[in-house]
Amino acid sequence: MLKLITLDLDNTLWNVTPTLIRAEKSLTSWINDNVPEAKPFYQKENLMSLRQQFNKQHPDKKYFPTIMRKTLLKQCFLQSGLSNNKAEETMEAAFSIFIKERNNVDFFPETLNILKTLSKQYPIIALTNGNADLSLIGINDFFTAHFSAESTGKAKPDTRMFTEALATSGNKATQTLHIGDHPTEDIQTALSLGINTIWFNQNKKMDSSLCNPTVEIHALSELLPEVEKIHQRLTRNL
Image (cartoon, rainbow, N blue to C red):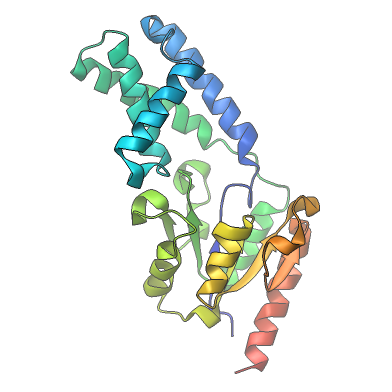
């Protein structure tokens, strides 16, 4: 019997790329208007250099998007001549602009119906390496828990998010289904724990040999019937 669904967010429920582009544009515009002295420092080459420094100094945090972005913003503001306190204050204001737009996502057409349907049947736990905020997005009520790289201290493909989801729900891996778009971070990691998987390989963009999911789908319209098939199979095997 299927008792738990774990669900990736970015590029599974929405295409994150245009969202991030909009968020970056909003942030850049805000900096140009409100902290013009930082404009020469909030440029691609400088940001790449700061990111490299961050990764060297904090290798355990290089996959933590909120911590990294806040650090880079503060460094830019310090470089522009702001005091430490003012740079900290300005960083928080700037990040609030970014994160608001970062969570203004465009759902795939089937997403909300999928969440409404599955949440009536199963507890759903979100597992993401990103910094999507379920409350800001407006879908928090569909989920019983939310684990991220920053909340657990480990990014997928580490198994920590998955094991915390299992521990929180009290369910076994064999009673769980993970749905995601990444062949390694989502599918192979879940499979390594014995979790059932559905790989959302949208429009067959990736080679099917990249992973070995329980089921591979190419459109979200295929998802609900496949979840039901897995539930029926697990029930028969009791």
